[in-house]
Image 1 (tube, rainbow over the protein chains, first blue to last red):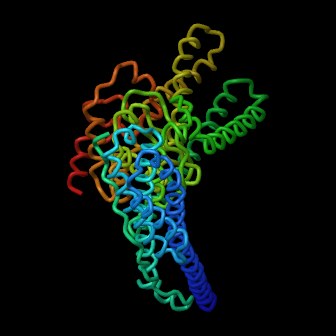
Image 2 (cartoon, rainbow over the protein chains, first blue to last red):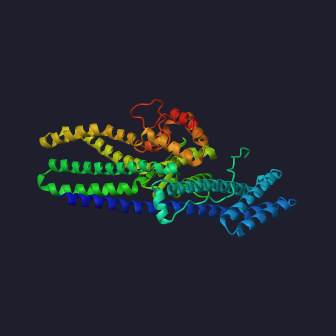
Image 3 (spheres, each protein chain N blue to C red):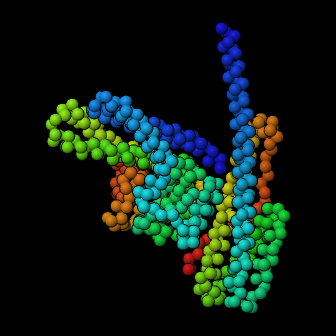
Length: 186
Length: 300
């Protein structure tokens, strides 16, 4: 009688251990995937921004003839972004591209006709929305890193992390994007 | 993110409540079938019971998979257009990125007041519906604040339980009211004494049930749930300013009597702001006091 109770306790104990192994394995996988996914999302937005640049340039070319410098700056930043090998590289070029784009938008203030151009305004809004989205995705990336690292470092996760060979993930240095302040003048 | 994981308990609770609700409604319909079978000829008892079981099973399954569509249909919402409603799509996409949830489907309903709701059975099948008034009256920041609030309802699985309650209990209250009306018809013909007595009992039960059903709906969207969604929403945007100013606009706007008719009673609790603009709080209030929500947001 006592033996069978003991047996049951051992079985229950083993079952709990197995469940914990499965739980932590899945947890690390889910949290790890979340990080990868958020990085992929940043890339998607950077790509979208780069895709809009040629349209923007062709929409302003007719208006700003004497400001070649700014346009070359934008084109170069875009090239650098597209040729970037790693995400931090691309993100860095991407934020430079955004700065260059900002100087184009500042320039546009001097061209009333351009400011009245439907196509230009639309591109401006799209680009500022992309800026927001990159900022939000970065935020989610940082949160994901934090929750992954928390689960790897805190007890009892730390034991399973050792067994599965999971270590703390370093946070990538991704160039920050300022979230656009809503414009009031149009 | 770490905080979102602690919402795990909240999500489990919502899932459990949904199952509980479905079981209750299922039992309700079978019980109804049983009473009808008793009143009618007893030789058909088994046939009627089988029909009742099939009906309630079908009804519950249909509601589970289509509650979002029923909610959208009841307010006559149309899918938003990618080209026409750019600002709205930007706001929803931003919030889906900030929360790490899949992009929900976006709908628009015709109404002059600022309002919005989220629905669906899980984050993979979620919808967000906003009013035309909201698109016209809110700026980008406020729009993001409101969408973040709705996104939190999706993240916490509020939508499943809230919409199921609205659809399932809403239907029960309609049936209850039908019975209430039948009590007069039953009185006028005196042939079937036994049937009358039972109908009378059903009618009495229905009379108690109808207000209870409304109460259930309002309980489903407890005040706590709205406060939680406000707080989670702020975490997504990292600033309470947008939602706060949107709630202030919701509080201060005046809407025509006509506009109120666009909001069926059963789905009204799903919305971010009380569509009927009730000024005072009581036990039947479907929404928490707006001023209290604004006050809490100011402290964040």
